[in-house]
Length: 105
Image 1 (tube, rainbow, N blue to C red):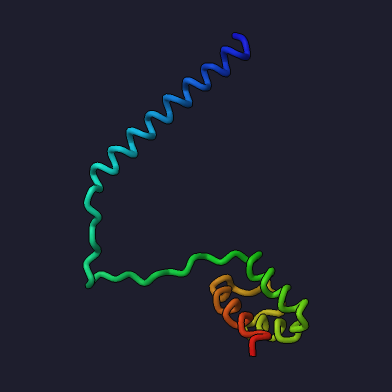
Image 2 (image 1 turned 90 degrees about the vertical axis):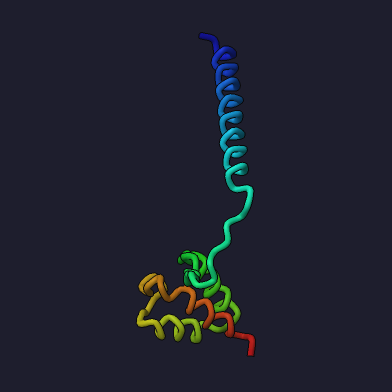
């Protein structure tokens, strides 16, 4: 089989896939024509999304470069660690909140 024939077969398969996806989307929008309301009595606690270590590291590095190195070390120590990678990831949101005030007052 030539390469052109293989590419044409791929194009046909992709068009078929796109048609199938469109059919699924149409079926979903027809069944979800009226948005369902969540009862007011059933409220779920919104869980904060997982914050990656890289984001926390970037924020703390910026604060450190601005001259708050001792304060950054203090924040990390507050959560029982001597380096950021040793801090439990459950505390990342709190660390970001603590770092946010550095240099702001």
